[in-house]
Image (cartoon, rainbow, N blue to C red; front, side, top):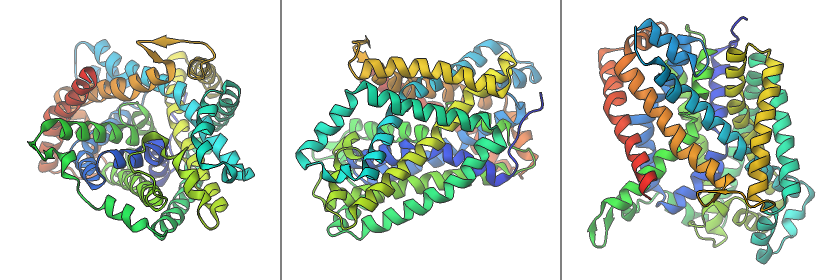
Length: 462
C-alpha cells in the first residue's frame, strides 16, 4: 500500500499546528496562567519550549520522517539500521505506550468535547445569556451528571472525527486544517481585541505582564524550591499537552512529511502558531474575567462557569459567546482528528486494513472507552480505580505518565542510539551546524531527561 503524504509544506504545518491548538490552549493554558502567577508561568513555559520542546519536536517528527512508518515500527526500523538490541523494549515504551496514551485521550476527550458542543448550542439558542449568575455553576454540574446529553454530544464528535479521517491525509485531514486554521486565528484576534478593550480589562493585562515572584520560589520566608517546582511541572505538562508531544501524533504526521521540506522551519512555524494561540487565549480570558470581577484563580471552571457570566454583561454578548464557543468547537475538532489519525495509522500498518476499516475499528474502540468514561463520570454507574472515576483516571494517566514516558524514551533513543540517522534525515532538507548538533545532543541526553524525570517524580509523590 502506497504511503500517504501531505501535499505541501503548509499543509503539514497547519495540520500539525491544528493538532496542537485545542482545549489545551484555550481551556487549560489561561487557567494555569491564573493559578501560577501570570507572566511567571508564561516565562517558564516559553523557556521550556525553547530548551526542551523544540529539540523533542524535531526528534519526534524526524523519527517518523526517517522510518516512514507507524509509532511502533518506526523504532524497530531505525533500530535495525543501527544494529541496536532490545528493539521490542524501545518499541513498547516509545510506540505502544503512545498508543495507550492516545486511547486514554480519546476516551476522555470526547466527554470534554460534549461539553463544548453543549455550550455552543446553548450560545446559538441564546439560552446561555439567560442563566442567572447563581445558576451557572449548577448548570455545569447538571450537565456533567447528565449521561444522555454528554454521551449523545460526544458521539456526534466521534462520528465527525471519523468521517474526516476516512477522507485520508490530503482530502480529509490536511484539507480540514487548511480551512479551519485561518478561521481559528480570525476568531482569536477578534475575541482578544474585544477582551482587551473591556472596561477594567487593564487589570487582567497587568496581571499577564507582571511577574509573581512567589511562584518562582521567592516567598516572604525566603527562597523555596516547592513553588518553583510546581510552576515548572505545570508549565512542562502544559507544553507537552499543547504541542501533542509524546502521543505519537507528530511522529505519524512526520511520516507523511516530505524529506525535501525544511524541518526546522516547519517546527518553528508550528511552535509559533501554537504559542500565539495559547497567549491569545490568555488575552481573551484573563482580562475578561478581571473585567467581570472574577478571580483569575477560578481554575478549570473558567471556560464553562465564569465566562458565560462575562458574556452576559457584554454589549453584544450573544455574538461574543457564540464566537468564543465556535472557536472552542473548531479547535477541539482539529485536535481529535490528529489523535484519532495516530491510531488509524497504526491499525492500517499493523493489521493491513483499508483506511475505512481502520477508521471504523478506531471509532469502535474509542467509542467503548468513551462509553465507560461517560458512564463513570456522570455517576450512572459507580466505576472507580485508585479512588478516581474513569475520566480523572484517563486524564491523569495520559497527560502525566504515558506522554512523559514516551517523550523520555524518544529523547534517550535519539540522544544515545539513533542520532546519526536522525541528523542525516534533517540534513536532507536543512543545513545542520555543529553547534546545533551539540545543542540537540545535550538536550536529548541530559536536559530533557532531567525535566521529564522531575515531572514523573512530582507526579508520583504529590
